[in-house]
Image (cartoon, rainbow, N blue to C red; front, side):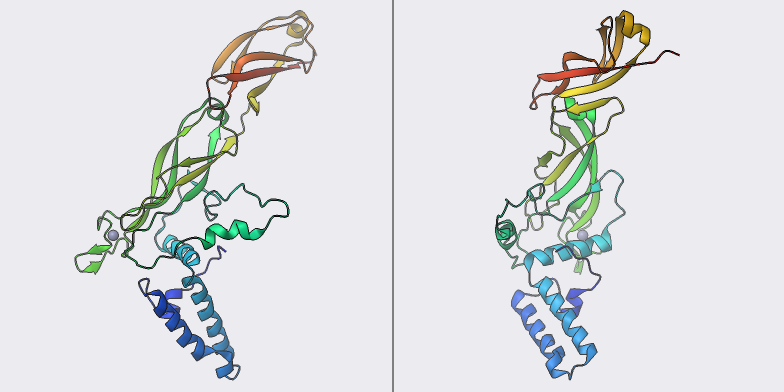
Amino acid sequence: MAQTTNRDYYKILGITAKTPKQDIKKKYRELAKKYHPDTNQGSKEAEDKFKIVSEAYEVLSNALKRKEYDRQRSYKTQSPPRPSGGRPAWDREPPGGFGRRPPPGGNEQYYQEPFAAEPEPVDPNMPTSGFDLQFIIDVPLPIVALGGVIPYSYEKYVKCKDCDGSGIQGDDECSVCQGKQLIVRSVTLNVKIPPGVANQYTLSIIKEGGEGKNGGPPGQLFLKINTLPHPKFKRVKNDIISEVTISRKLADEGGTLEVETLNGSKTIQVEEGTLIGEELLIPGEGAAISWGKKRGALIIKFNIEEND
Ligand SMILES: [Zn+2]
């Protein structure tokens, strides 16, 4: 549904953002009649215009399509370049919609219902809640495993300071937000990563989405965790696996060895006659279990240097 267009549907239908619904319909009927192929002896130009008018009406008469169209349009006209921090993801999917698959043989209709149920805005002064935003957040493996706080920058609608969110300056429309009451700005949030959170898990952060209009509540922010690969560690559920290369001498004779852990280092005992691929388990040095304090194991997997 998220087709992008550069056409100004408002201009095409000769309406403004504040034109009531029934008048939009009236305008469309007038234009559709004017350009209808039946009344234009098959004129190509009229046919094209008829198509564009129909397209414009289809979008502006549907609350959800219109909201999306307005959003894309305002991004096109106001949005500064995206900061490197915020990675735009599937931000056009409905909230909670990602990662959900229709059940086998299930009916499509069920999944489309949230769209149809969206209330249609009737009054431009009605309080409207802000947009929900969905992004992917890259998190280093040690923070995913043990929890922590990382800053995350993203863009969202905030209240226009120049008109204090009224959209008006004096008798005119506010020139900064063009009467939209809101502007797009980059913000930075300190995001709390729960210890041992699953990769691809989506954090829901309430009220950190786009600002609402006319006193409406802000939207939600959904951040999907993407664990960054680590040069030394690999996570398997609650365990952390680390491959360590030791000398032939240490493998044959045994001895102590300092190994890197998620949050420091530890001295381990290498057994005499250690073989390549052998594993040593260090309990309590893995990833946190179920967002709690208990931790899985660190598993050291030995590689042995060949003598030369
Ligand atoms: Zn303003």
